[in-house]
Image (cartoon, rainbow, N blue to C red):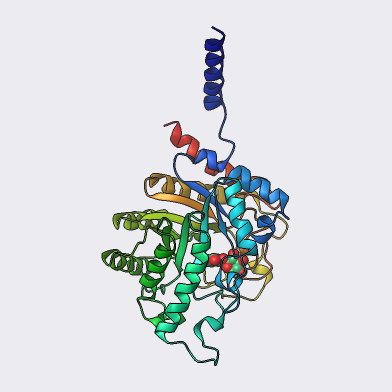
Length: 374
Ligand code: XIL
């Protein structure tokens, strides 16, 4: 009798909570749909940003390393790997039972020049660069085998017109450097989910290039599991149709889709074209930095609506979208404060500079709540 009463009380309380309360976190709101991730920085990884850490633990169930696993940081010299921060990064994710992302293995940026040269300064041969790439991938992926669940194996291999970028990797090894990188990562951790990551795939020419690339890799038996759409978006790009069509196109190829680096720029566009090229650096100018003293309410609402619209598309594709990761935690952390113009006050994320949820946060939660009550 006593037990039965307790059980009834418990189900009554749970029932009440389900009907009366909105989810209290992003990860709870989207629990049945996909992981909600954040890229985290060194202060957060090492515990210096306690406020940030509390927010990450409360809101997110996946993390990405903003910089610490990039080649220049983890492997700064030919014979020197530095795993101090990456070890703490992985430990942080394990402590909080998170889906842990590795970013990234093969890229043309944040990769030291020595990688492509021998000790006399000559360009490496194809075989020597393949050996170096294999060694790097085996060392880094192997160290976290079974602990990092997904790797961005190749980052940004495509040009805007869909052709392969003539990076040092491509020039020295040839087009098959991509297949090789995936092969090596698979050897090093056969269980890891391997990702091809890029920006602007929502634009048709680049998307078609990616479709051709993934189709070819799959036909060769290359173990690619996901395509990562970085998602460095703005208020008017990509259109919802572009977002929808892009996810659908990759789903048709039999890969899953991850939104890997989401943020939405509300500042005036500083570049002629939409890009996420980290080497762009435009001169500061007050017209490009209009909201130093705060975001006007109208723009705040536009951002909220934009986030809600994009999440509606992600949710529509919840069967193929396995993760939505924000590139940063609060607006204060975002790389968008210094890119593509240094020293701007940017507002691209769901939490403000005081780590408080913005209207965009509420809007994103609302999308999940509305879906589950339908
Ligand atoms: C950015 C980081 O956020 C910055 O701190 C760093 O200075 C440059 O790189 N695409 C990517 C990410 O794949 O690695 C980039 O991260 C943002 C664009």
